Image (cartoon, rainbow, N blue to C red; front, side, top):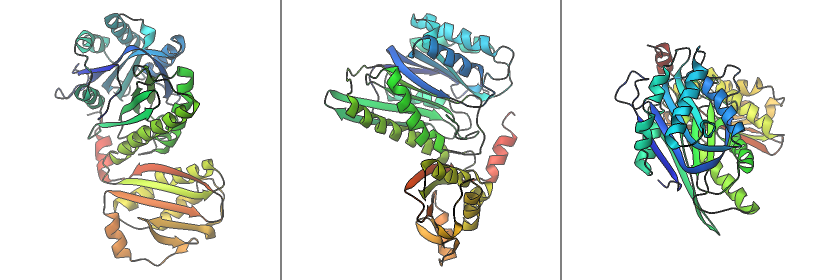
Length: 395
């Protein structure tokens, strides 16, 4: 995969998680401080690294030299969380010969368990010593921040402008406790384009709305959610207004790919579900309908069982809070009409069940004559494995 210039990566095992065969701490470093923008969880219960990252972005004027991330412990709802987060940033800053305000902390894992700061501080010199560019190092960080994920999640895009080529590359984690609300996981996106922080933020907000905020696995918003976008200018390519619009679209593609990978890897999931709502008066109405369908346990379990129960889809749209005439609604499953005008359409149920056995399921809800707005949501089926995973998460 293509990676942006001017970044290095490293991971290590610090003893935070029980599995010694998987790294649990990682470091992302920009060779020169990068312009940065970030979005965070809207949960009122926020982990110490979230609070500190917000402070550091504000005090640094949107500049970031490094991101320290750990898995296995959320550093949330603990007595020592603030000190642990700050100590780890100080350790990274010392090793990089920079200031703590240029370091962002990020954590994921179990809530309410005290985290020994030594577990984060001790591996920092080794991490800095082992920093490398390249795909292997990049992917080692993507794997180190996994929790119940079954696979790493990465994406990149390359785009050519008049001044040269820039790359956007991202990594993310997420499998459970996933619900759209500003951000939904840990995600780090790097580019070598030269873009100031004040211009990065609106780009990130729009891309997040189309991707992470259009994603749900189980309806639970985490305490640690954070998406950070870094632009270090190492390509020496500056963008004019028109080119920035192109860049913003490419950024959204990367985030959409990452969000789709999360949905496909939802805890216990066997099927990725992509929902489209079309023909509504506003994008927000379309999003509310798509979100309601994506969050419905009855829809998700029906898909798990390959049951073409379109009535559950119509019912979820109906309680979304959007007012519409059910007699104007058509529903397609796997691109085949199953509901026309709010009533059953003729289709071969056995053939449809076979189509629903695949690893990707598409649901389309169309409101005829309502408007031109549309929205897309990513989710997954709900299986008994989800209960098994979360019933034993702390043990």
